[in-house]
Image (cartoon, rainbow, N blue to C red):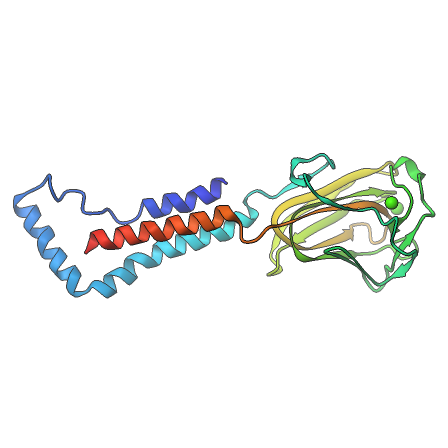
Length: 249
Ligand SMILES: [Ca+2]
Ligand SMILES: [Ca+2]
């Protein structure tokens, strides 16, 4: 929210709207009047020149808002996960997958890490995993989740970490939104995740080369687009630009 306020600030801090008109007569007033005639004759050029930085500020601020509030989630009770969809894999047919789509999430293994859905680890490893789980046992390298529509947060319960893992969240333009290191130590369960606006893909990479890990309760929050706050901001910006342009003329 802090970044979004920046855009409003930038707009309201734009060119002054001839505030001295009534308070300052004589020479300065004549100068202003002269300038105004000149500005009217060059009106279109002036408008473009003054509007450009305002638009740039507004668009930049909206862009940076995507990464401003990114943070690591360490609990399924994190407020960012309120109302989340939870995939427990319990009704997913058991088997080995190279690509598995459930809800808005698609799980992909890399060339060495097929993803397996099984109940082999039900209740195991003091982890909290139950019933079917998703695991990369037998492969053990990088895996990926993509989202059909962007999410604002995700998390997953993991077990049997032997090395640290790097999780990197990307937006739809493949720009990194957040990177976290997950390193709970073997072998109790650990719930981890990322909150960030517009997550379209997450890449999970073991830093030690390979590590068999068991996952359950994959949790995500679908993002509602367009964000009402952003649209309100944009409308406010347009209104402000309209006022500035009118006063200049
Ligand atoms: Ca399960
Ligand atoms: Ca392991």
